[in-house]
Image (cartoon, rainbow, N blue to C red; front, top):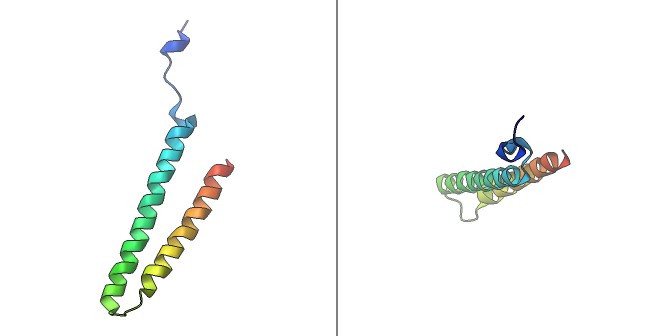
Length: 73
């Protein structure tokens, strides 16, 4: 018979790990959107950061959709 205290916790159902991974994914996605928008704005040479705003808002929309999808489970 196996000792219950010697069992490893199930990593798949651990909410701390799940939400920590989700937080990292959020930071990476938003950072990528901001970086891509910034670089496109540098290439175009426009004074107003159009692509920075568009890509940031697009990344936020994708993140909100991902959070809703992941927390429904």
